[in-house]
Amino acid sequence: MLAPSDTAHPDTVERRTARDWSVDAAAFVIAVVLGVAILSITVDDIADMTSGQVTTDAVLGAVCCLSLWWRRRWPFGVALVCILVGAFSTSGSVAGLFALSSLAVHRNVRPALFVAALFVPSAVVCSIWLGRDNAWSVLLPTTALAAAAIAWGMFVRARRQLVATLLDRARRAEADQLVRAERARLAERTRIAREMHDVLAHRISLVALHAGALEVARDLPPAQVRESAALLRVTAHQALEELRDVIGVLREEPGQERPSTVPQPTLADIPRLVEETRRSGARIDFEMDVDGAATAPGPLGRDAYRIVQEALTNVGKHARGTRAQVRVAGAPNRGLHVSVRNPAAVGIQEHPAVPGSGTGLLGLQERVTLANGVLVHGPDASGDFVVEADLPW
Image (cartoon, rainbow, N blue to C red; front, side):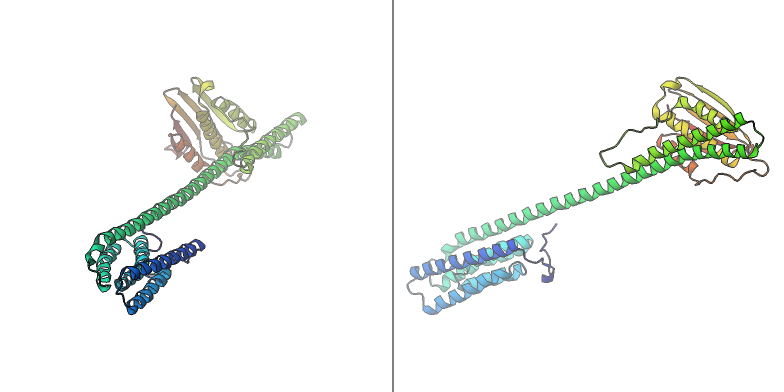
């Protein structure tokens, strides 16, 4: 991974921040002050230094110091200019070290090593140009300074890369968290939609069946009419309670989940479900042979209940008047088998079927799959419509 300025085109370099301006100003001032000091020491040390050499040294040193303002945009060019110009300027040596360090920060190690390799002979040439007798004595300190400048630049570069990597990981982690949260919300919406379908479709179907029975049987005794009206009221009330409970989940704020006010169905509630459906006029043969139904796990009982509920709802919608057969059998460590069977409807229905979404069996398939079970539905060889499920227990 490269630093933000690792690019060949200068226009891609980010704009300088206030911190960058302050750092560049400090580098310029330090390079000028130390350059003037070095030039002054050199003039005092070399008595036969001509005025032309001093002027050349000062002018080229000024060029090196001024070029530091562009070291972020063109680090290689600025460093190369400072090193080459430094062969005739002692006052530009500090600016050259700054440029070399900046090159190591903004570019990979190869250009920095190339320019550093030129820094040492440049210092030797400058020493010879000044007329020093021991020109090669600058070899060791110049090499040490160049190595220190490159090492510092590589350290800054590595630290910036580390910070950039950590920031990138943090952004990725935040994005992944948002994706997981969105998936959780979608899964919760799917669950709520399935619950609304499973719960309300059955209740509304019962209301439609009760109302249809009252419409057909016009000569019922008043007592039976009152009983049917009471069933309608109770069924509608239960539907409203269950709807209120499901919608309450949609209105919950994160971290403020409230417990459900409607008890979840269990395996032991299946007989009551069948009896409620019978009271609406449906004909059902029911058989339940389950060992330890009262102690069955909650999710298992809820899944079995929803399977029977959806199957009976479909019987009331599409095969009203037929005789359905409901079988529930199983035991711990043997699994639970749920079967609902009904013959196809014969003739024309007296009343239009209750409209449905067509996703009830798909919801059952998802529910059974999540429970690691197997669901089979559709007409069999005899023409009966069968819904069968095998759930692990």
